[in-house]
Image 1 (cartoon, rainbow over the protein chains, first blue to last red):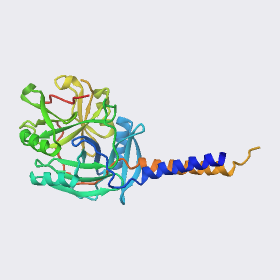
Image 2: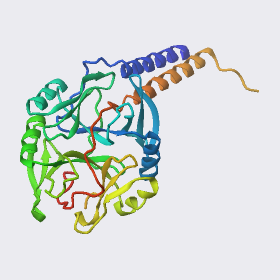
Image 3: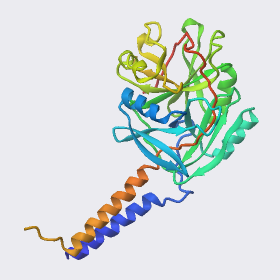
Image 4: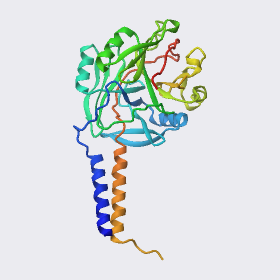
Length: 280
Length: 58
């Protein structure tokens, strides 16, 4: 009786484990197009990034591989939240967080980008057993990852502290960007704020997924890009630790900016990132 | 005195360890890790100055 029970347990565990590991490539789950599903940091200094994000947000890190290249998986608690990629093999690469947007068909979406005047930075490819992905530069040059994941990730109903929860597009031409992202992701848009003469557009499908606004003409140092947001309880307190960890605050908390709940920083390698309290 | 586990129990322990290893390695399947030269999009050391709106929908 005990032997039979043991064999059954072994069989169930083996089947369960095999099912998890050997999911066929065609078994990609359906994730709503336009949802941001992952963020990878491109950096020239992985050890500094680990120290910075570990010290600032309490993330922990695990060395893994993607293909034959090293990859660092960051966790907040037990939740995988981000990845870190060493880009030293690109002689002139800049540090940047890359936001990955879910799409139904990576290859078709790459075609949409190209037909709108964007460029392919990384050709569509399978990352078994994780996803099919590509990285593109949109018509305004902003880098963006496109992904069809093989396995779903939680679509947070409530944002979780020390995790990504929003992405925001800083446009040189907001009208063009709105048109493009509506075509690419099927978003609808609404304007949530018009103070200071700036229209803040919220992009949504079944849920609100991202923000978009036009950079002021004076912001000549910033090129169009997707800026990812991490939820923090006290942006000012977190921001005060940034320089001690090797980063830089480039937009401090101020009452006129979302009641002092937003801090924009650069990490030690120069990748920009927003720290935001929510609600604000 | 510690008695050695029965063969069935040993088999169960091995199976549990195997399953834990496989499930753990599958957890590593989170993350994408595509390296890319995305250039530098934020030059200088200042933000865009005006900042309205913000995250919504939660």
